[in-house]
Image (cartoon, rainbow, N blue to C red; front, side):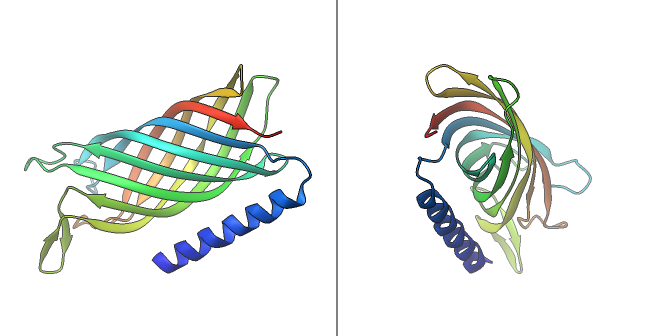
Amino acid sequence: MNKLTVLLGIVVVFTAAAVAQSSSALPKVELSINYVNTRGDFAPNGSGAFHLQGMSMDGVIDLYHGLGLAGELAGEHAGQISSAGESLSLFSYMAGPRYSHPVGDRFTPYVQGLFGRVHGFDSMFPKAGGTVPSANAFAMALGGGLEVRLPHHLSLKALQADYFKTDLPNGYANRQNNFRLTTGIVFRFGK
């Protein structure tokens, strides 16, 4: 799966570069810095629910009339997620399509689907014959949000809500169905 993720990333970067070069004007690009709060659910019955908090950086390039390519790097942490006092840190990197459509001069709602990997660490992950302190797995985030345009090439990411699925080993189904909220500042460049 790692090789497939890298190959997909390379194809996406070259496709975006080709589309950007074919346009005479610079494409619209957005970069954002965000606060992230994820309701983690690492037990099948919801008894293992907790909140991870952290930061993310997003980048979006508009390829054609609101259809763009989004990428995200996120790091989150939660302390004492179990009765044994374990903590959990996650680092995820994902990319995928985004569609946004301005409503008036100030508001831009969007939807997106991001796919990639998550690295879990500072915790204990079950493995045949014991546990390991870190693990890697598939991750995806499906959701959307609303940006509010501010002066001087800035926007406020008022709210983004995502279903954030991870497949880290947990001794149950090895699947986590998380809910994630994000807010932040967006820097806009290009046309």
